[in-house]
Image (cartoon, rainbow, N blue to C red; front, side, top):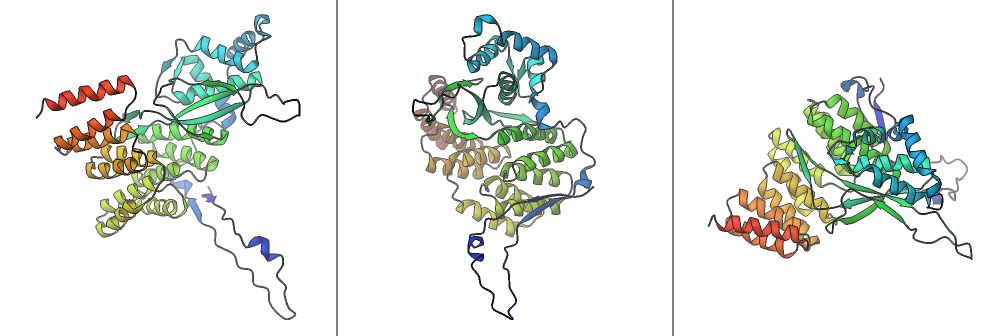
Length: 393
């Protein structure tokens, strides 16, 4: 089987000017090109693709019975004056009253049949219904109060995604489209702590489906399946630092350490989000006893200027879960420097200080976390932790 090759194109500003170059008689034209970075995977190392990895269009496939039930609801005479996007929303309301939140990622058919699944499963089901109803959808990435799930020695931080069912597009009397369209948001948990991160494309949202399944495969040490799922993610979103990082992890755990290092280096050199890549590459170097090189990577991490506080917040949690409490404090501090209003950063530092036996510092950071939390339930949680900590002094 041929190796999977992924090519990232570089935009060259000189291309537009090349057309004006004049070649004199007797001269040989010289064309200067910039070599494109190429990352290739030796897919034969991981066997044949599993047959249960379904194509994108099948993610939304509902059974005939499910489709008929929805169409009966959608076309009922009592709802003919209700806009289609609202009918989809009302149907979801009616069927998700008994929906149970679980960490599993399901197709639309599975989510509806099992009446459960994570936020991505709900988004997939919403999309499937919207497609039948002819309703446009959009997708938003939300960073809420971090929820982490541990499976074996793999820790997942779920990305929270929600769907927007767009209202019918109407133009004003001058034929102009509105800059912002109305619609309804479909979400499991709408909380004050939720923060809009960005709109994401349909392709990015589809890649999340395969990425979630890849994480589940890694947790059960099924690295062959994880490889093929991540290959799908990278095919859809070739600039995903998270997927490249996971691919390196898969190669390292499967015993292909040299290839893992090549993947880490590629991501570090060519992708904008380097925090997890640098951190995990340093772990690889330390495991090989290459401490001087690992020190250089530590220096790069310390100097890194990532503007997104959540990158550092996630890196801090990752370091904490691995028992690297000093690193965790360093990363949480970087999040504080960028966004001092995030209570999660102070809480992260507090628990890392606690693990290091630094009770006074842990108390100080817990007080900061309580100060910057605005939900009463979160404030109460920090207060309880402070009281428990006070009993240890």
